[in-house]
Amino acid sequence: MLIYDRIKEICNDKGVSPSSVEKKAGLGNGAITKWNSVSPSVKNLKAVADILGVSVDELLDCPNEKVQEETVSTI
Image (cartoon, rainbow, N blue to C red):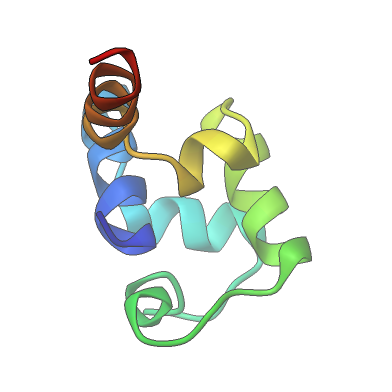
């Protein structure tokens, strides 16, 4: 899962829009959307994580992929 898609998923779970998170983080309009093709700075990623109340790891990690990795390693 790409970074923007993960952020969008977390935003949906929390009932906020990615654009409102961008504004609160002081990012430009559409900045988060571009993160699927351009890597964000650590500072911007941390700002978004703080606003969403999650860790940076959670933004970068897809729970479904982690479950699959754990399943494969135990087989």
